[in-house]
Image (cartoon, rainbow, N blue to C red; front, side, top):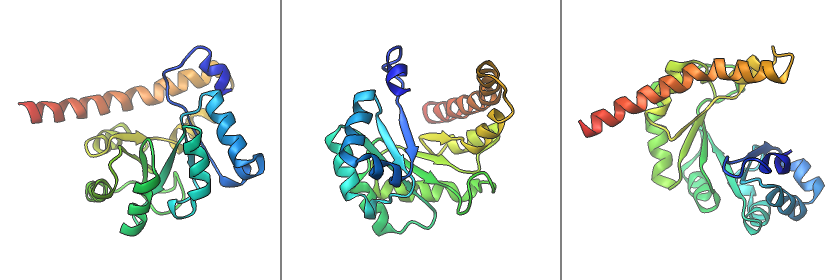
Length: 194
């Protein structure tokens, strides 16, 4: 699918998200090579923290692929430092402890943690988990480099019966979110420059 997509789009970054076991079963070096050949840019392997990533990360780096690491409110400074050594592309801050889509993001606790991550890791910080509404996304975009919306979008797509429905639902759902984020960033830019 990635190779087919790359026939018409060489610019859009593609990140595969999954688990270690299928990659190991496929063969780590072979997977990394095939993913890079297809046009993948990075992998987010949710059950592969930096502490356990040496073999996998080495194969990915050799193939020119970034490994994106998850960090959480419970991530220690030593683990942040380890992620800093290996991470590429960006860092994904899982802003909640618990199951994705099950809780609500507490915006007040976000800025201090994003600052703490930036003390250790010199990469963009994407924030996800618990972001469903335009106002939440706008507030997150004021402190983070990217906003990740997963479960809420999947819930919208589950109602779709065709690709056309999915495209329409995605636009309808994400349009107001993008507008709110653009307005928040514009306000920030005016505050800095004005």
